[in-house]
Amino acid sequence: MDSDTKKKKEIGEIIQNRRKSREIVQIDLAEIAGISPRTLRGIENGTANPELETLLRICKVLGMELHLEVIR
Image (cartoon, rainbow, N blue to C red):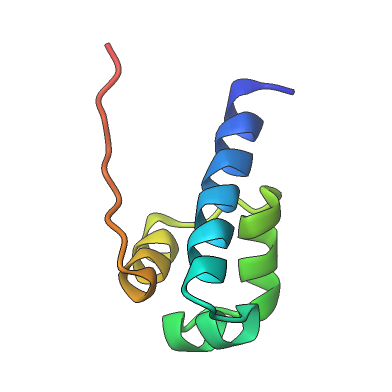
């Protein structure tokens, strides 16, 4: 498994864990965030390649922040 795949899986797990801890079902999170349930499933499974805007919407609904780090 390459580095990008690992990172997508990790992001998906973080989103899924937060969603579950807030007791929100996938279909409700997708609707509130303005994305399709299929897209959310892909993100949580680590198979989707979401746009930054999509991740920001999900994070906002879940009360999370997205931080970017410059790698040298």
